[in-house]
Image 1 (cartoon, rainbow, N blue to C red):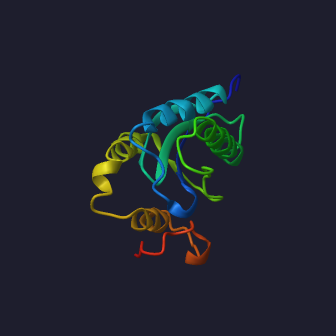
Image 2 (image 1 turned 90 degrees about the vertical axis):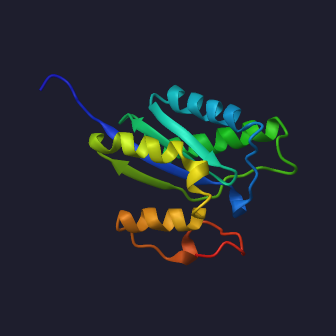
Image 3 (image 1 turned 135 degrees about the horizontal axis):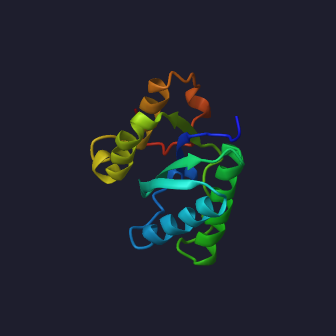
Amino acid sequence: MSDTFIQNYIHIVIAVRGRDSLISPIWKDRLYAYITGIIQNNGHKLMIINGVADHVHIFISLKPTQSISDLVMNVKRDSSSWINSHHFVAGKFQWQNGYGAFSYSHSQVNGVVKYILNQEKHHKKKTFREEYINILKAFKIEYNPKYLFEWIENDSV
């Protein structure tokens, strides 16, 4: 074989620390553009990015030159710094420590893109907690609720 052929579609979910609703509609498109730049500068292809005030979904075609954890670390570190340098929030903006990363096949790409595109509509019916736990269950990922994201106290399942 003369070349290497890899296709990895990864759905990444990151949440604001404490699940605070800090991502404002006023600057979220600028944030998404900034995160897009981070992803592209790391050699990956962004399929779609969208979210709501307390979390972001990022769907990419991941190149094998970087681990998912290193990419997510770069995205969270650099975007936090960018948000803080622009003083978009009172105090210090931070992402939560954990994240979700889920792989999909090529035949599932359109469905994932549509799902992420409709985040605002989707979250009128379902909380982030419900959404995230449903994703974990769909992928048959065992989890301890104690070690999931830091949930806002009034956000129950």
